[in-house]
Length: 430
Image (tube, rainbow, N blue to C red; front, top):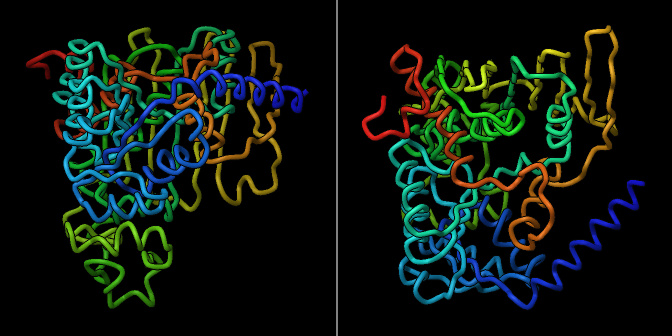
């Protein structure tokens, strides 16, 4: 049956490709980083060239834009974003800059008559969020936020079970997310270490997790109360330097990261750092880090459900686990990377009812980046046309509801008080 389903999916995509070939859309990219390269640029020129064209690349670091162009076979590079919009014939702009300026490129794209596809988070504060929503209303153009988690089959199956009433009316959710000291530490090497650039992990990373819960519950957040601190990274040890490449502790630091060992990272960042002074390998124990590495958040939804959420960026392993409690029972799901999943061929969801019974769902593990989510999201963006009964493709409003939890959480941490989420979208709100 799985082989038959895969064949049907493949046939559907082929049919959609044939229809889309006659209307080949043009895309341009603002922000030439590693994620942009692998999530959008290379797929466009390698997998979707029959239905889409990558018509331009722009980055404030012109040399990095040229490097990404070379990696993609010579895509046109523009030294000015407005010139790219005017000259490329773009139908849509893909925004992959640092998070704090997403709004600038989204709004400029909309006002130029283009749709905007933005990496998460949509933006980093409520004022910028309001500006995006207003520009979308004024122009009639469309904003898509790329929540690849929605496209992970395992996550989608959880939604199907909740929507189907497996636990009845949802009353509470507990979600714990663990970043290991490889992935987690990397945020503290990059520009994400500064909360002003990415909103901290509660906006940059947790937007995935908050959106996942919003999507499962089909509800919106009302009130947020949170705590957060930087207790592991930052200036917590004396043996530290400015960056790994020149650090005197490189031979004995377990967090040493050789940015030159990966050819793509070397070409994109090290070879171009003279243009803007951006180092991709800052010391995770350096001064000036303002991003929290441990966080706890409480959310009350408009429908009454409660979410308790935690994120730690220094765990021995990576993954997440969730429990969903409802009037008719409880659902448990978990997804781990590395050793914890090494010997398993299945993902598991457990549902417990009030008669003492348990139903265990064994889902075959799906191959691909981020649990197969990236590839499915790319097909949705560039081929499209498939039915979307679960509402996987997210727009600006869904993007807003996820970041507003993180924005409210940061405000709550600073003030020590709960924050009203709907008020953040009102001019002069809390």
